[in-house]
Length: 102
Image (cartoon, rainbow, N blue to C red; front, side, top):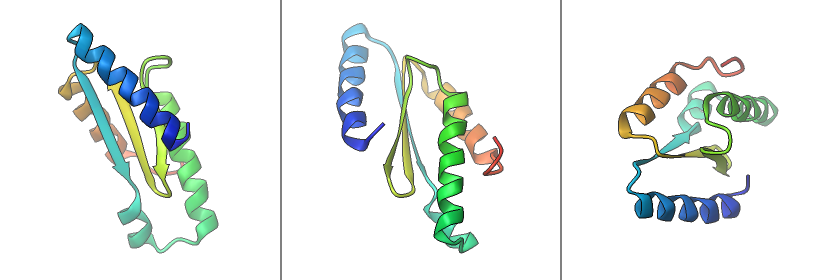
């Protein structure tokens, strides 16, 4: 999903959550520090970014949550209907990932 598509879908999901009184959680994941600490060549970082996107597909609810790459090394996951505790659990799980394998 592109950044522009994500922002449009995000607006819809937030409005729907407000209307229905559902909780709404958002995770912003940045791999900037990961790249800086590991000094990876561009092709290796691209492979890691692709594997991260694949991991997101496994950990989000199909048809409900939405995830997108927002720029070069940043991702956004929107989780309508998910309370803060659930978002915190997913964030903790993501922090434990060994990039390249979820």
